[in-house]
Length: 136
Image 1 (spheres, rainbow, N blue to C red):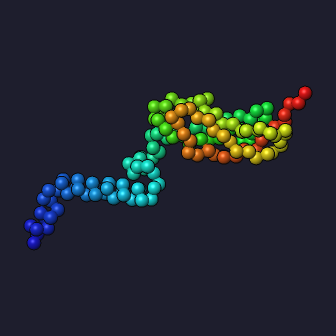
Image 2: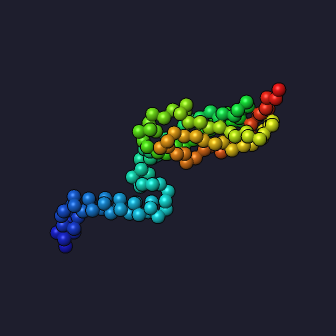
Image 3: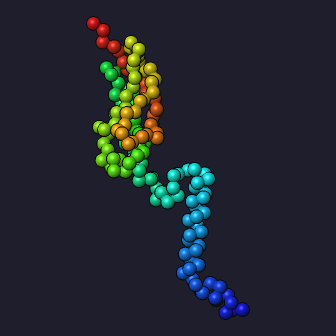
């Protein structure tokens, strides 16, 4: 009986350990696929996916100001482009078309990103604007 128990664990130990690790990885893949929390379980184990970046960008309001003056944008795309991307390459602006003047008007922020890049989150999505049109 002791020989049987010893062989159960010790015989082909590395093969059994590899099989256990592989089973765990397959289980994680299925679990994350079902719950849809991240695109890959491997990336979930190491943190943020490498094809994602977070930048803080100033908000542009034509002839006005925004409160808050900056937004945080989560970007997704080609890792080579994301690595070299700077806040100056992204434009966050508020469309003031048709507005004569505003004091504390809440407007959505529109994001313009380079080709090959998309954004998944903007915080905050809306800003309060101070704006007065210049009339002659």
